[in-house]
Length: 325
View 1 (cartoon, rainbow, N blue to C red):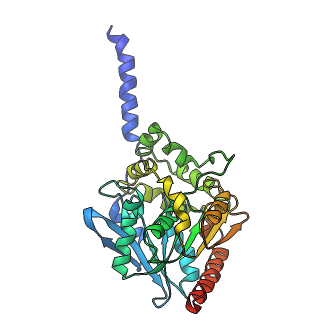
View 2 (cartoon, rainbow, N blue to C red):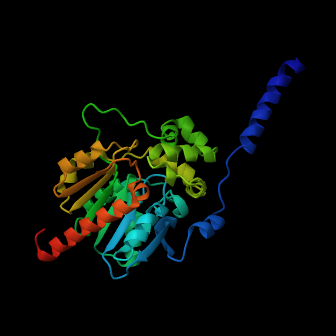
View 3 (tube, rainbow, N blue to C red):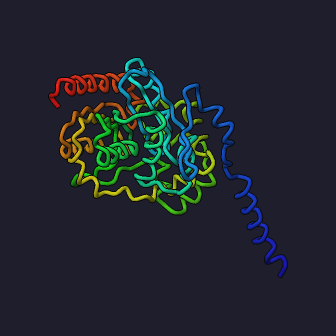
């Protein structure tokens, strides 16, 4: 009888040991802060323990542009644009709750209001009243949601492969990447909080972009390490379950701010056809689609993206100064 139960017991013990010893541990916050901040990094502190990592760079006398990153990213995704536009514009980038060095939202609120509390905090910290607002993917959704609620504060919108529009008739759900497919299932969310292989992060990145050269060792390390910042993996699962308030897509036509819509034609996370939906539903748009580019045009095609943003804002600012808008 004893032998009968010994083998299963050993198997359970071995499985439990493997579960403990093979887990991917959280990163050390102090080490991450030392590695992923620079001389422009600041932390804005708000209610409920909210502590937002942001950078205020570029021309202090230039038109301010606030940029919001996408899901699982951080303010670092905007570095190529800061480098190219910083001579003329003031660039404020921030890491949203549940990401990067900002870490989880103490209230576990990853709704639009919960996420945009970080934007309001940084705007107050930097003295911004009115600004150009841009975002990629989830950050694009947050940008146009903010413009609906605060039309007096948004001078212009920059939407880069922005989330929030419904699929067009006849379209199937996009294939997504490995990370998002795992988050779609309870077991996947459970496992991702404990097992986060670097190889899985790299594969998710490669499935998200068309220009594979941007998936460098340094970039993969950054995504992998910041995802493992304490609390961020749990936040990723909570964020995935947050309802994106689809009813607001019906109201997007209320936005009067001039809007530049940039998209990668090879985006596998949000189809480029969504750019057409934005254009159809909004009042004052300019749409540009980049062939050979995926979900991250600001990283995959930074020269073209920066040039198109600059040209658009030049037209917008001239028109506003002349009173033609």
